[in-house]
Image 1 (cartoon, rainbow, N blue to C red):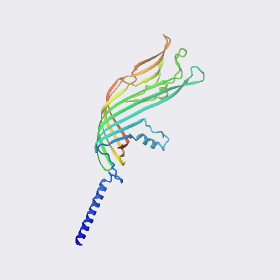
Image 2 (cartoon, rainbow, N blue to C red):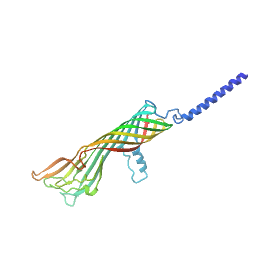
Image 3 (tube, rainbow, N blue to C red):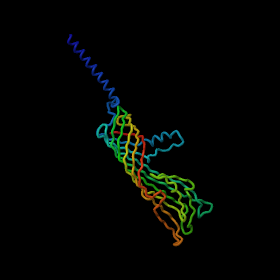
Length: 299
């Protein structure tokens, strides 16, 4: 009887110790495992895919203002990771930026009196950046910090195109055209240079039909750091900042002009290298900074 009581007492003590140990483990692992026992954080061998949440957040933020617009998914960053260890990963980041807009102006119709025609300036550009890096992580529970270094490659290009309502021909050798520069005074930012005098299409004896920027290619090194919060198993929302140095080279720009040749009495199209960017050919370096809010999925 006494032995039975001793065994029961020891058994109860063991059950109590197991319960206490289990509760301690639950406290320590509560941030790592959800109620269904699913591990929250990435592990060695996992892949991750993420998108920049900034465009969507800007859309939500503008929802209550008059500046509301659709999410600009053409200005986007895409993330990819492969975890070598629980706290180390290889990563890639692709940033895509596209611009496509137009301005309109009106000129007197050369054929019909008391009528107007529409001149259109179309502006387009692309900015692509690709980064490859090595990431280290540390943290406790759902909140994880990360940092590392990366190699960055980039491309940037763009052009202006002018479409005129009045044609240039033998009857109208110097047709009226809208002077976009005088009306809009547009400032265009292209990579390293602010360009203020590109938008004026009229030259001494003709008019510009296209202005094409020299393509910019860049390469450099950078560092990144951020914080990631796992709000669900293998799903996280994070914030990241980037800082680095890029070496870039920009080729010469080209300008296409239509003009009437009064000697041969014909319309001519000529494309020449343009010096509307100071120095025409740019070679140099610059620092860069960026910040993103991202949504990440791990699998």
